[in-house]
Length: 379
Image 1 (cartoon, rainbow, N blue to C red):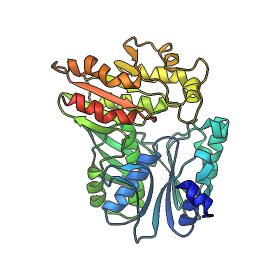
Image 2 (image 1 turned 135 degrees about the vertical axis):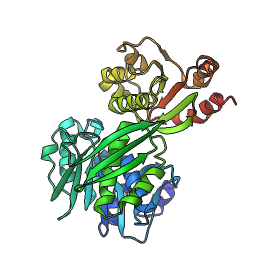
Image 3 (image 1 turned 45 degrees about the vertical axis):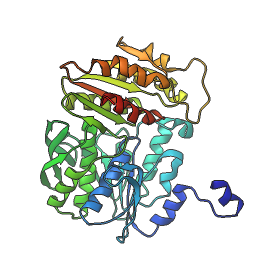
């Protein structure tokens, strides 16, 4: 298709250029950050759609509620996932902007962590006059983010302008209250795993509250939020087994995923299947990957998914294994994974002991989710 348009002299624009044009004349809510942006963007767009406020949504993931990453509305409000990759988010003009994280990533584009942080500082500087910047409390160099109005948010740190209180966990859901705009929105329920998602919800709810959406409408919308495909997505959830699939491909995301799942499903044995993504990221962050994966009880590693890269000498999944303290670990070829889980996981499922299985990675491990689900369901 691309070749046809190119050969017939159609103007071909990058996604970021199209969003620049679309957003020039609308009220824009732009969500940036090296982690959390897809979930926050989807939550905000869902809140606006579910409550009847209406918005145009440009998401970086598939909303489970609507099974799409785009929708339009008569209301001239755009909710946009602002991607730092290739500096494309600097083409946007936010009325409300979010910066959820500024951890090093995409160093192939930016070269240094500092250069990436500089780009986020520039993004904050794009906020329109009278506009609002929401940033996660305690960001490194967060004080350098400058915008006309600024607020911080946090899951539990009461020093943040917007923060959650009274978080309680109940069978895979969180119940909490949110201090925002000088009031407390109580009795909020999020049916999505991971404490980091409570924090993501705090940012999204703060935006809805700022847009004068009523508390009751917010409560209903958040309780109905089913998440984003591959972001702490429940594939199976019952007394005996919880199977979660997630896109986590960075050590921090893995840490949040494993600790979040373990705290929600306390006492369950946790097995993670992880497919590392990119040789360069594995090489740069091998120690951190090892430390994060060590948090599971049992680890199965697939070979590295190369994506756009050529293999690097000496860089493989074994590089992570060598650095791990946990000895319950196996490296399994992708085509052998289902068979491996059949004999080493599913076969032992008759025990009384409830289990927790996680698949994680940004490569093609998602193609394994259905086959794994089938063997776990005994098909």
